[in-house]
Image 1: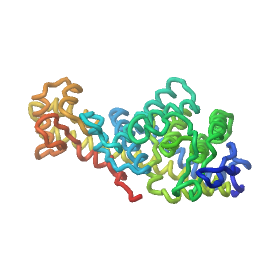
Image 2: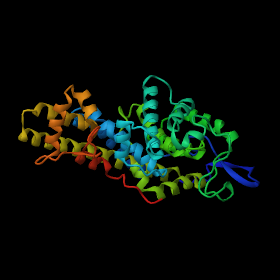
Image 3: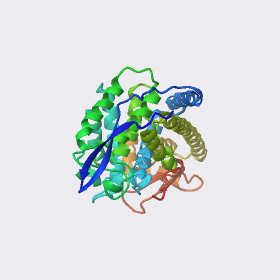
Image 4: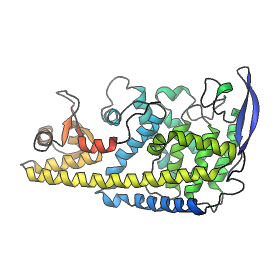
Amino acid sequence: MKRGPTGTYDSMAVAGEVVRAFVPSPLPPVPPVVLTGRLQLGLERAQLALGRLDSVSTLLPGPRLFLYSYVRKEALLSSQIEGTQSSLSDLLIYELAQAPGAPIDDVVEVANYVAALEHGLQRLRGGFPLSGRLLREIHHRLLALGRGSSKEPGEYRRSQNWIGGTRPGNAAFVPPPAARVAECMGELERFLHGQSDLPVLVRAALAHVQFETIHPFLDGNGRLGRLLVTFLLCHAGVLSEPLLYLSLWLKRERATYYRLLDVVRSEGDWEAWIEFFLEGVATTADSAVGTAKRLVQLFEDDQRRIREVGGRNLATTMQIHRELQVRPLLGIQALAKATGRTFPTISRSLGVLTAPPLGIVREVTGRARNRVFCYDAYLAILNEGTENLAR
C-alpha cells in the first residue's frame, strides 16, 4: 500500500548549504498495516521457522555449542556490512589470546559487537526495559574501543549526519536534525512499549526501519539497528536465545534492502518492506537450523572416528573434542584449564587429533609455544557466507 511520504522535511543550513532533513512520522503507520494474502503467508512461514529455530538447542548436546560461535559469526557479518575485513579466525584468536600489542581495528569492532550483544541481553534478562537508555548503553559498548571510540559512544548525536554522498547537500538520505533526535527516539520507545495488535515480527520490522531512519548516533547505527531486531524478539519471548541474525540475508540482499527503506520513506509502502523482512527471517532461521543439524552430524561422525582410533588417552581426546565443539579455536593452556588435564596429556591427545588418520584438528600459529588449535571442519561450516563482498 502506498500511503505517501512517511514523514516531513526540515530545511536547515549545514556547512553553508541548505539541506532537507527527513523527520519520520511516529509509528504505527497510518492507515494501519493489513496482514492479508502474501503478507499473512510470509508471517506464518517466518513464525514457523522461528519456532524451529527456538527449539534448535534440543538438537545439540548443549545450547552453548551453537550459541558461542554463531553469535560471533553474526558479529562478523554485521561488521562486514559496515566495511570491516577481519575473519572469524581473527576474532576467535583475538578473544582467546589477547596477545600483546594493539589488535587490528577491524577485529576490535567485531569484538565490540559481541560485547554489546551480551550486555544488552543481560540487561533485558535482568528486567531492564528495552528503551532509549538501554540502546545508548549498548551503543557505548559497541563503540567502546577502536575507530568508533571518538564518535560519542552512548550519546545521541549533536551534529548532522547523512547517508551516501560526500556532504549533506549531495547525500542519498539526510536523517532528522540533531535537535529532533531525542523526540523521534522517544516516539519509537513509546511504540515499542505501547499496546498493539501487531505481531512481534511486524513490530520488529517497523522498528528497524524507524531506527535506521532516525539514525540517532554518529556511528554504529547499522549494527545497532540489526541488533535491535534480536533484542525485540528475545525481549518478547519469541526466542529464548539470540539465534536469529539477519546480517547474512541483508549482506546478500543489500541493494533490495536499501531500496525498500527508501520506498517506505518516500511512498509509505510498509507492506513491501515487511514482506522482504519476513522472507529474511524465515530464510535465516531455516539456515540456522540447517547449520545446527550439520554440526550435530559432524560432531557425531568425528566422535565415532576418535573412538575407532582409540588409544590410552581416549578419554582425554574425547574431552578435548567436546571443548572444541564449544570453541573451535583453543590453545593448550585453555584446554588444560577446561579439562583439568596436564599439558603433556593434552599435547599427546592433540597429536592424535592432528595426525592421520583423524586430521580433525590443525595447529594454526606455527609456534613452539602458546600454540592454538583449530577444529577445521567446524570452522569451515561457520565461515560460510562470511567471505567479504566488494563494497
